[in-house]
Length: 303
Image 1 (cartoon, helix red, strand yellow):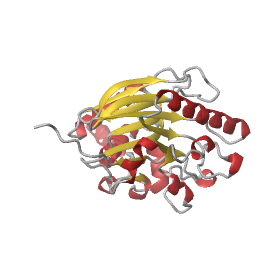
Image 2 (cartoon, one colour):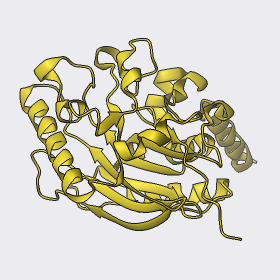
Image 3 (cartoon, one colour):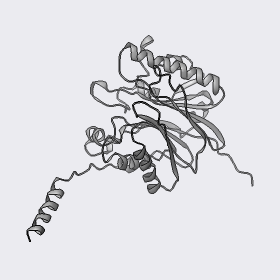
């Protein structure tokens, strides 16, 4: 009898003290459509930063419904592939993933993508060992979508303020520009990631000048978001609030972005989550996802 009473008390205590997780209105996060290509960047801080981060991330990604995601700060290999497995359980598409594994700090870059829509040619790191501009080596994916060859370069540039860190980010941008011109001068290229700096700083303060001074060649599709102080920014915290996660396209993709139905959006998960910013920060990440939707011409199959 004493054992039964003890067990019942233990169970009651567990129920009373169990953590009730904040709910998210997932249906309000939807962006993806079958007729468009959705590419997302998301720093899922120190993933998994909580024991619930894998489930939350899978549900958020499933709700947004992108086709490819460039991720940053993926610390655990097992958690990463658990995320991929959960997406396969949730979604009708077949998901696969690739996580880099050579970063000293273990905050790796990664890709997750729908294998039934995305034909991956190869994934590889660039600038490995060039630590000053790239503390985390950019991760490149070459793939085919709708018979179009596309290249994505996923980045996590040097963090923190100050002249030295800004110089490292500026150097990284210059090297990315040179790399694209040398290797993909006529290709559909997308550069995305946590770039740890603002697009709209004036003059020499702006680390993205190399890209911004070539408007005929490059476009930050999220530039208008960065200009708008009242917009949903990707990093919405206190005195450090800013829009620091970006998506850049080369001129080969300008037409696709300018088509009706294409757009870019910061997904403010916290606005649809109980507990808002604090809950998202505690359970998932300090960053919000950023998604670009691109509309390509439909390629008719020969009959």
